[in-house]
Length: 462
Image 1: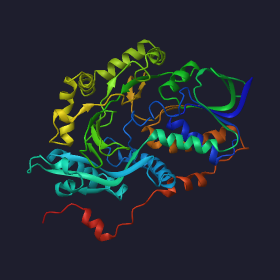
Image 2 (image 1 turned 135 degrees about the vertical axis):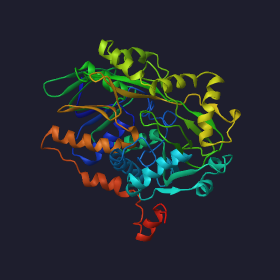
Image 3 (image 1 turned 180 degrees about the vertical axis):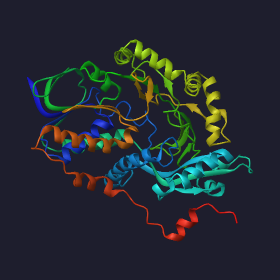
Image 4 (image 1 turned 45 degrees about the vertical axis):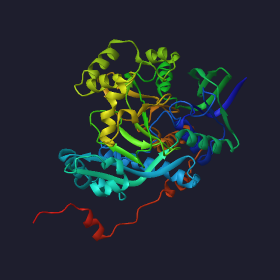
């Protein structure tokens, strides 16, 4: 017996759950199935222990260009608006201060240029440039123990959304399940996906599914499935496992350090855990692993399916890892996993945020961290730091929607627009309703008057 659907979504993390919520609530697509191989929704990378819990706006991520920040900002505001609408008691998220910290003349100048000259202060009205005394009021441990003559600056905003993306995924799915025609199958693995004359057919360990359109939102496995179907030529993966160190109550909010621009991995930062603000997490580390899921040996062979074991893939890896910035970074991150030695090696990164931190203050977080696939362009033999999506007429493969969960609703909006067009004139997307339920609930800053704008400008020499 084959179950018939208009749309099948493979993957029940934040990406697949966001799409299910959007299609079920704001289109007239009638029969939708979400298929998830784990027994729970959002059990892998979207689980709150397996990611940085950050809602990225692009305001304090110093590896973002202004153009990328503009794109990311809208997506983050959609998710923040959804949370403001459905989670007033802050059960799925918390809202705290966040800042990016510059220490020393060179870093301070770089951050000043970013804020005043490059346009980030204009793009983010709630973002303020604050000095040592103001930093100390918000985050005392960041200033305590530093050389008092050392120059400091931070870009700070109250929009520090700390999010349990697993809980948000559950919220999306539970909402969609209330709608007739929506089915959610957990503990159901897709073992094969094929084209048919009218759409797609899925073989699973719970039977067969057939659909007119399909979206595969299974993280690293999306590229694996795509390649099995003849898509994704010229693409491979560089899987990166992130980990964290835990400390006691050091910080009130999120404190980023300046990002090295050539690295696709997040700068080390410290922040209070979404569900327990007495715990401070520092990280992430970034270790290359030959697996698509952390701690799952069965996914090692899946990685080699994606890698391809061909000359282009090997040459691409060699070219990427030969980079004089990336290679030392990768080697250092291998050390952080070693008992005792790893703590000692990582401590200076913690002390860059909290100078008084000592070795006994931090411990490696056991069971924390997931795998983030970085896309390798095997044609150009480069690391692709952008969004990884493969789209055909009536099928989409979402591999790493950059920057991940933060833009999940914006990504779902774009995918929904594509699906409605692909399925034909019988279907419509209520985009106004979608925006009303999401971004229109995001709290805006009051428009600053002229005097306040002048006060933000750096002093001019006579």
